[in-house]
Image 1 (spheres, rainbow, N blue to C red):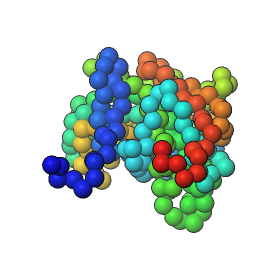
Image 2: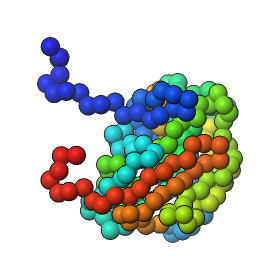
Image 3: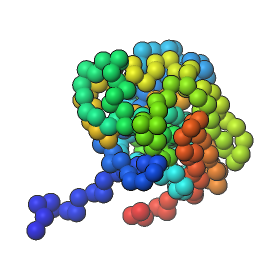
Length: 234
Ligand code: MN
């Protein structure tokens, strides 16, 4: 007889290149980490800051993503995702990469209208960022095959290039992001960090085909499906 009053939820996980899946603990995201995206949003550059998505917002590459409710402006944001493989707090930048399990391409899907309203009202970003199906992530390439500090990052919608930049343009690079984040939270194996998006973010609609990637990593492919039916349980 289980101790739980209900069946426990499934463990969110991301595929690993070469086989197996990484169970995901938390999803952290970085805001304003490419200067051209800071400009296009009309924002001021800030020191690195973080927000979160719920781990069960993960979506695998290849999946159809239902157009989310309560938005008329769903945006794509292609990002390098860092998977943590070893726990730590107050991690020095010099040894931060020892905590990395691997790297993947991810899309920080954003209900831009809700995020903008939250910004204007000085309110939290959760409803704009942390909604169901808001975290598509492609297969993770283990860090044993090398770390990533530069390389093309791109996203196409229906074959048309929308975002095209380079990881080298991150304002705060991965080791410093891990160091800073680990002073706020104890990082755990299975944490994911979305490291920010370059310029070119824009709206997507049902029927759109999204393809995005990072040089050397598995391509992330998703389609946007019609909204889920009202009242449905799935
Ligand atoms: Mn983002």
